[in-house]
Image (cartoon, rainbow, N blue to C red; front, side, top):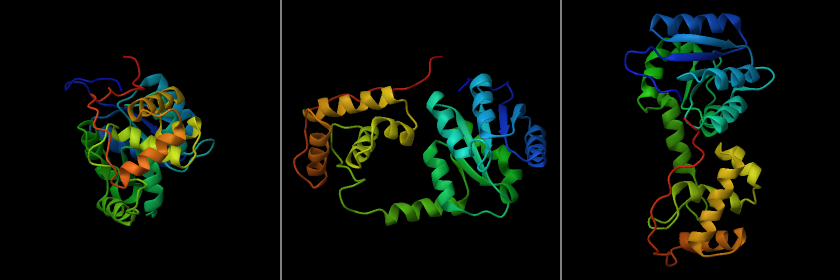
Length: 242
């Protein structure tokens, strides 16, 4: 994401197939001092304009032709891992599952056009300070989803382990027999970065195959002795060049 100083006005790209919605969103943003540098009519344009302009934030509608907002966000985040994207759902929609999909795709926020459009500038300001832009209802939905998550081995990880949080996410996908490309799509990473994570997992667990890594990880989750080999955390991978 392009760095800005406090004196600079934030720059935004708006993506919505409805011209009236784009105008409303643009008016709300510009009144708050946000510069709208480009507007996209569909998801493909949103990806192209974002990669070209590198805005501070992308305001993305969920349902669009050519490429929907969730898929567009995945593509953007794969190329620009630090890009901020806030997803807007259509008027009257209160689909928490859709919101969860948007957040998994890499969006940092999910708001309703009809209920929260006037709060959009404040939400964008919060995003730039590292806050999530989601409604209280969505927060409650996320909490309920965590509570409903199975308490078995899948998705849980030992308090002490040599693997990073991201590597445990990769382990979960390996357990589901996901391919490298499928894992890259789900984690919004490049295939090269996923291969690097898998290589690190095999090295840290001292195994030679993905299947062995999954089996050992299951034992670690069941409370078997964990590998106590101290290792420093790897720096984040997949960051774009400045």
